Length: 140
Image 1 (cartoon, helix red, strand yellow):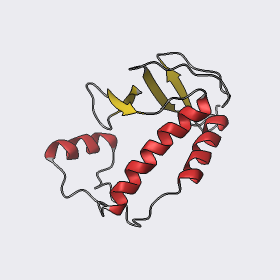
Image 2 (cartoon, helix red, strand yellow; image 1 turned 180 degrees about the vertical axis):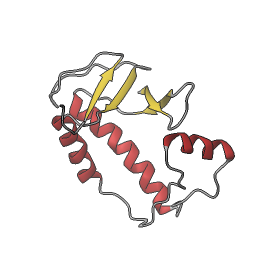
Image 3 (cartoon, rainbow, N blue to C red; image 1 turned 135 degrees about the vertical axis):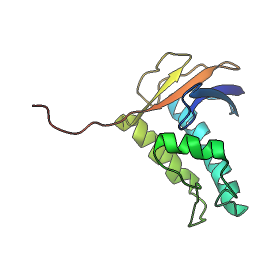
Image 4 (cartoon, helix red, strand yellow; image 1 turned 60 degrees about the vertical axis):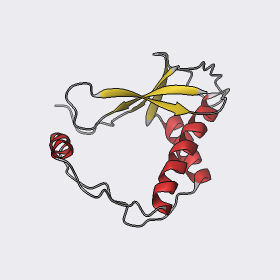
């Protein structure tokens, strides 16, 4: 099944969010949805690490300008080159969801915050993962 995932492009002022197509299997609950996306991303990361693509060959002027807006210009290097453990990544993503580090929205609606909460996805549904920022400090 193909779904669209809203992804924020770092440093872009206009059209900061773009929808990217993802191919995932059938999912029945929130835990399976998380596992499907983590599996896809770990496979993509491990393929890059196995191919030796640990750094970009160059940065274009547009990429440098976009990174400057975000506050950090880097090549995106992965210096250790190790592949990631899929089971540990899935467990970490599920625990982060339960801890409230990020939220999931499917077509603008948030499912229950339980991993066993049912999810009914259709072809080309829009999914958004929102990472929450914890604020620290004192109020006077």
